[in-house]
Amino acid sequence: RYQERIQFSVEEDLVAVCLGRRGANVRKARGLPGVGLVECIPLPSGGHRFVVTAKTDSQAAAARELVEHVRVRVPIKREDMAGICGRNKMHLKAVQRAAKLASIKVTGKKEVYVDLVGTRPAVAAGTRMLANGEKSSRRLRR
Image 1 (cartoon, rainbow, N blue to C red):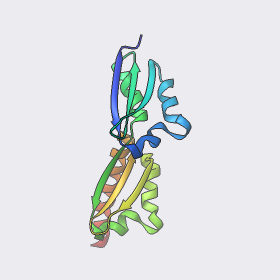
Image 2 (image 1 turned 60 degrees about the vertical axis):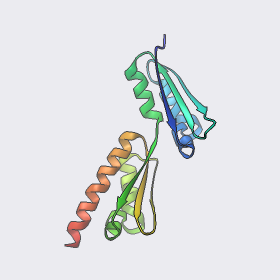
Image 3 (image 1 turned 135 degrees about the vertical axis):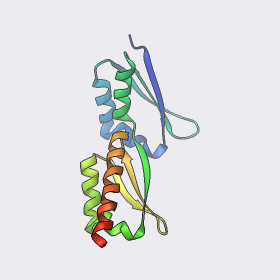
Image 4 (image 1 turned 120 degrees about the vertical axis):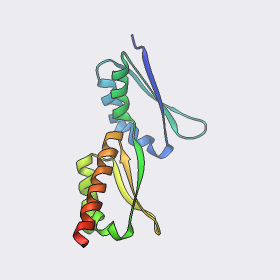
């Protein structure tokens, strides 16, 4: 019997990433032990709500961690941009691979940001890597 239920909302443009290619993320979450239902419900205001039911709270949380994707915008200084991005965005691509992010891109003109999209643990790892890259970029310029 599935007793635990977790609901979370996702922005409209992140729904496809949450579902995964052909529903791969949802299938993985449903395949976890104790997980019964992983459902995506459109909201009238835009965006979607995901509902996860499982036998225990920790099983529901594990399924949520697989499905839920977030976007974090990290500000970077213009003078650190070359060191963080690298030639042909080589460093950003390395961060994306190492942190297992769904996407990473540079946005903004006056204020520059790096947008990280992925699961919460992946985004946290990517943010740490960018912070470390910013520190090493400053050391190289000295």
